[in-house]
Length: 591
Image (cartoon, rainbow, N blue to C red; front, side, top):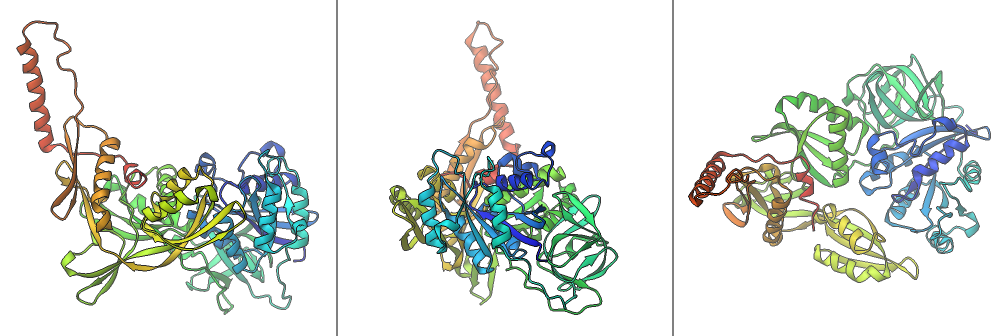
C-alpha cells in the first residue's frame, strides 16, 4: 500500500483538467503514442463535441514503481456531484488553476469540498506557456487562500508537457498512501460510480478501503442487503482490464451476476456475504435544482424510455427519476436535474445513445405549498398546482451565490443581481483587481438565464457558484401558454405574480420567432386562469397562387387570393401545432 497513490484533479471549467490527464497518460506510458488523442478520458462523443467533462473517469497509471489511481472530474457547476463522489474515494487532489484566468468560482467551491474531506492538496498553475499568463498574481492568490509557501506551487503547461513530470514526482511525495490496518482483512469497498455495459451488465466502480475482492467471492451490498457473486474484477487502463484480485487501497471495478439496475446504488458499501459491518460514510443526498417532465414523443416508446432512463440514472447519481403521467402526453417521468446544462445533456444522451425522441416539459424548481387544510406539500410541476382558493401561502427556494468578477464589471453585475430579485451579502476583495460578491437569489432565476447574462456583461471574465440556502414566501401563480386555442401543458410554468405579465409577453414574442410557421395563422397566448395577459399571431406560410397568371382581368387574381384565404381559415379551425423538441429549453434561455 506504500506504493499506491489515489488522487483526483479539481478545477474550474476549461482550466485544463482533461489535457493534464492526457499528458500524464502519455508521460507514464499508460497509452501508446499511436493510440493517443486529445480528451482521451472523455469517452462520450458528447463530451468531445462540447469540450467539457460530464462524467468522472478513473484510470490507473504507473510512475517510478508506484501505482497512481487518477479520477478526472468535471468542472461545470451542473456536474458538481461527480466531484464530491470522486473526493470520497481518494487521499489527495490536484487543484488546477488557469494562469490566464486565475482563481474562479468553481475553484473555490471544489477546494472547499476537498478541505471537507481532509485531502492533501497540491496547488498547480496551468497554461504557463500562454502569452497572457499572469503567474505572479495567480501565485499570490493561491498563497492567500491556501496559506502555502509560493515555492510549493507547481507551474506547468498541460498542453506542452512542461513541468508534468515534476508534478508526478510531487504526487508521490505530497499525497499520502492509503491508510493500512494489516490486521483488518474484512472487505469494505465504497461504490462511487456505476455504468451499464451491454456485454458485461452492471460495472461497479469501487474503492477498496480494507480487505480484498476477487472472482468467485460472495458479496453483499450493506445498505440494500442484496447479495451477489463477483464474476470479474479489474482496473481502468483506461479500458477495463481484468485482474486476479482488487487489493486494499486500490480503485477498480467489479462485475457481478446482478442485472437489475436498481439494486446497485452509488454510495453503498460492499462486503463479503459472511461479514457483518457498518456501512462506510456515503454521500450527501443530491438536491436537484430544476425539474422537468420527460415523455416519449411516441407513446409506444415508453418501455424503451423506462429502460434507458434507469440506465442513465445508474451512470448519473445526481439524476432523480419518478414515474409520471400526463393526460395529454401519457406516461413518462418527472426528473430532477442540477441545472439546465444537465437537463440538455440527459436529453441528448437519450437521443444519441438510445435513439429516443423525447418531449421535455417546461423546467421548474420545487415550491413548498401550505394549504388551508393545514397540509404541506412540495410541487415540482405546474400540473400539481392546486386551486388557488385552497392555498394559504407558497414558498420558493433560494440559493446562496458566490460571484467572482473583475472590479470593472462590479456595477453592471450588481444591477443584474437586483434585476433578478437578488439581495446582497458581504463583498470581499480576492486581490486588488477582483471582487467576490455574496448574494441570495431565487433558484428559478439562477438556473435559467443568469449564467448567460453574467458571461455576456462581463465579457466572460466573471464566474459564480451556488448552493441551496432556504425557502422564502412568494406569490406564485401558474402561467399557461395557449397555441391555436389549445393549452399546451408542457409549456405551463410556475412564476411569481409580479413577473407574470412581463414574462408572458416575452415568451409569446419568443414563440413567434422559434415556432415553425404553418399553413394557417397561429394564435399564441399567455393566460392566468381564464385571463389572457399577452397575445401574438404567427403569420401563415403563403404560396404565390397567382404566379401562373400572366395578365388579363384582375378579378381572376382576386378570386384565387380569396380562395386561398378561405382555405387557410378552414385549416385554422382544426389545425394542430407541432412543437420542436428544443423549444422547451430554448424558451427558458432568452433575455
